Image (cartoon, rainbow, N blue to C red; front, side, top):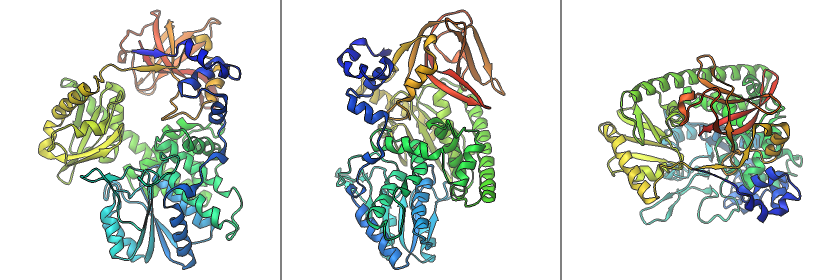
Length: 574
């Protein structure tokens, strides 16, 4: 089903048309923005509109505890998660200590495969041996009950800063760890205006709070903390939190700071990724930078990514980035090989509404990436598993709004040993004997929740506007970019081009894995439309030269080898 804005929507919001083009006005209305004041605030966010950090429960106490640790020369350990939110966030706090010229700290990032997610007792024992008296977590810990208990027993203060949802006990009450301090805008008693920050965003509020009270004492220049927004913006985009309210401020200004980052390793990483600093955008973060940071924990140790963000000279930056690029190349190769194997497995059987596929020898760190590729190809929720220490562990990704946590919750109680995550992405474990029944049980569960929610099977696409290929111009692109950065909560605009006729249909890429369609506008200028990892057979209509179709696409600006191009990114052909 296709739905897109009717003219009546704009007529009701004619005020916007006095200031903005019809296209910009329509895009704003689709995002719930109907007044000039709200539009101006959205299109040009004001950094000063970010909220007072001391409104967040636990920030004041954390500032006081950090100050006491510094005054008493106590050793502090920053314990960060191993992804592209936790690692940058750890560096945000470390950057504060560096600015304060406080050196009695270290950073601990757990190994994705050997330790897994969370705060681990083995790690705490190592940290204690270093003489640590204060642990500050970043992007992790809100479910760390055992860790909090251990720290209490060993007289180590544990400050948890996190953004994930707390556990809920059998009585339906919030179940928080017994830590010294908890900073999490999602905890019940926190009235912070924007609870949807990422982990790096939360620790940035702690840094802001510290500087509000102690900036002059340490001679930290006004505005110094804005240089941390390269990391906060990177993490905000990477962690796919809603890019509205304070997150929009972080992403908007984070991109500006990232373009002139002082971090030698980050600058070198962007260069090696082939990204233009001048035109760097949120997609460059999502597809070019974050995967390389995450490649460290997927293929080796997360400290390889930490070292890139902390490189202090050109020689170190070059060496660290080169190593990370090698890990990322291995990651891409391994994902491609594994995806190819999954295609072979799936071809041999009937494709069900929920796909489950796996092998005992597949590498755990790439399962989520493989699941995402399968969702792109088959348009179905997908669960991918491997075996670890005699137990089945896996990752899952969804499609078309099907809530994975709800789906897994609707299976038989004996299906999973553990599961969790978000609506769109999750992880799970189950006994080896249960994996054979996993696909059947998940499909049964989907039938249950689909019936409850009036069936998810009919995909709905929201179209922002109907355009023609003549509208693919710099002016149109400029209109669209006024609403950037795009992401969750502010989706990249989708347009329908009705009855357009392909002049050329072909595959391109090293192995001909990408689709390219050429159209002509009224000036006989060629407009290219592309889709990565797609063929003309992947759509519901026949795509061939001379046969009109309805194209659903984004308009994007591409810079490759110094060449600029406006093109269409195919979403669907109907």
